[in-house]
Length: 192
Ligand SMILES: CC(C)(COP(=O)(O)OP(=O)(O)OC[C@H]1O[C@@H](n2cnc3c(N)ncnc32)[C@H](O)[C@@H]1OP(=O)(O)O)[C@@H](O)C(=O)NCCC(=O)NCCS
Image (cartoon, rainbow, N blue to C red):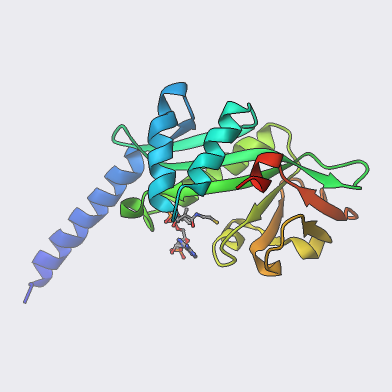
């Protein structure tokens, strides 16, 4: 059985390791040379190639609005992408982006990398002048970052998805108030 002295040392080591990891995570914009590494991350994080192929198509068609990578010790371990979505019938239409996909290599999941990508990208989207973000995904994950069911804002998804997985976040307070309508993604999403 470990003594309290050993436990204290072990705790200190863990603390140092986590600080080191935090310090070495870099969140930055995607560079042309990152494409292959991003594909590897997405292929590994999701079942099947659909998301990786979608990202390839969106990149080729110039549809990226913001693409960030998480780099740990020089390795790309996470990726997040935003593309423009339209809210049909909303006039004026808030400047809204769709978040998809978000991926972290399984070996590095549950270490805060997804959160770091989320926080940095939401701040950048706000600085870029966007009003709101739409996400389709885990209903237990996105609310950690302030997302609410999009139905609260009377927004509907063009795809047939369960209500709780379709979420929205106001980057500017009130940006989605009084707005209602159908959210349309870039056509490449419909080709998945
Ligand atoms: C979802 C994903 C991006 C999260 O990345 P991550 O680096 O593991 O997330 P974090 O470590 O920052 O986790 C932050 C919090 O969310 C929780 N969490 C992580 N993954 C989760 C998931 N799939 N569902 C619900 N909660 C999740 C963590 O436990 C943590 O909770 P805490 O703050 O209470 O401790 C990652 O698990 C992943 O790539 N999954 C496969 C692809 C995928 O499903 N992408 C999202 C599509 S919607």
